[in-house]
View 1: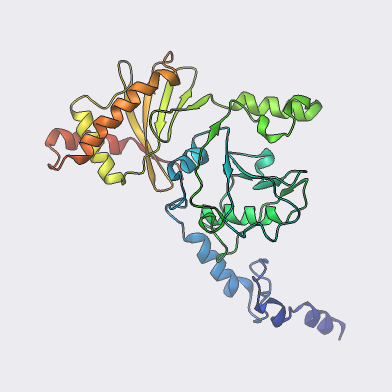
View 2: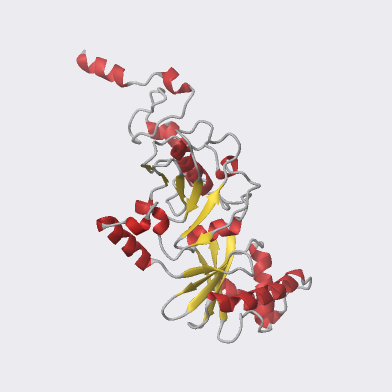
Length: 327
């Protein structure tokens, strides 16, 4: 009798979950919805299906889509002020002075609610739902109701939860500020001591020097010991962009000047990122004019109506062979 009573009391009340999200439990446990079936054969199947549905361009529709991709995949340390859509912060716990997107947070936290109530939202976090925009929106939603002074723990986003496109003001500009280190983690980095200061120093030492190019959109210079690079996130459809790059490569106009070379491209979150090798002495400032000139040549190549020649097709095949998918 005791066992039967215990088993009965462990069953969830159907009404208790009817109007809310079904909690995640072990695959072989009874489904919390009260159906009597195992979770993996009931709502767990829906959750698994949601995870498998990868959103190809999670930042599409957001201002600065290409910069979102760059900060997610290429830039070590950067922040961007975000503006919430009207009414999103109405149910927040206390005042929310500001919301700031950060490339990464300590311990890869999804978000952090600072003691003053402001929010840091981490971009370089693990995606659990297959839709990075939904995962970030879930972390932001949770941060709004987290007590100030606490991080937001990792959790699985609901399959029908809001996306960033639902929570942010889509008319607000997206202007990244690239940093040389992670001092933005702390409200007063200069006062850091002990393990906090040591942790910050280790993080800063691991960051590759990176700067944003001003003359063209969404291009980032980075410096390494052997050579420098320019990584330029472009929103032009991949096939069209590859054709244009092939046209320029075939006539020797794909470089950014002497000693530079277009070496391939990344694929990241539905966008293409051409990559150039640069001489180690070529700074971010040195890239400004060559990048602007290349943008003009690229515009002309994109507008070319003729089919690719045999030489251009060979150049295109070479570019395709050197593509790397980041996500």
